[in-house]
Length: 364
Image (cartoon, rainbow, N blue to C red; front, side, top):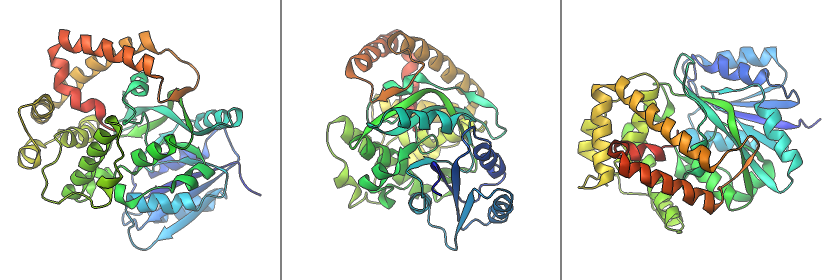
């Protein structure tokens, strides 16, 4: 019998967080699902642990890869194995809150014109402590910046198949790329409260993979976002790729450093920014230089400063967008323009806010 939903999760060296991720799915209020898990050549004992879980719960279907596929290809492989008409993504170091599947499926049941449902999320540190709560302002970012990534993504399988799924060429930002193509094919709704918890761990795939490879990939993501903001396609960027020796956007180092910062660590990326960053006498470069230097010297005070900026942003967002039920994304232009005006006034009154302008475009 076909389950109501397939939860799909690629796994690569996910200990010590794997148990919490699996348990969060098995404890969902929605019970009619299969849990398709792909072990992508783990070497840390994750595979053995998954075998133990599969013996405990018959809803788990375990797939195994002998050679590491990487994040994009493993995501495609496990998604393709789903048998249900609705698919929910899960990441192996995160947590789905108990109501996540029930709430997202309800939107799809009530709205046949909607093909994708996302949700806001908490950010938690390696110990599971919430360091940032759900942020409604994410719904009012430019269309080039989806307000959620892989974790809280739930979709109709037919939409995923229609757009072609994940693409290897967009590795390390395959979720952003997929959501952009889905947005062109269907309506997307976002639950404006936390249905998920994204863990910022120092062992993140982005940080444990080859550093230059990850930096080039994230740089490609920012270049693609710039094309979207200009109303252009980014397909021509993907096909040939970017030269390996090309200088990369300073935003890349803020994005990658944020993982370490919110994991409670000290990002040490200033030297790499000076060596590899496409620096100039502009706001983006100055912001990245200040952010990376500040993060290396005083990460605690940087986190406190960001929280203050987020509070002010949240108060301004609430003037423009107040929602308790699903919100269509992208949010209509009038609301977005109103918020942009508020933020422009804030930046003129509070120059320090510009220091972290690059951070608002990070995926997390």
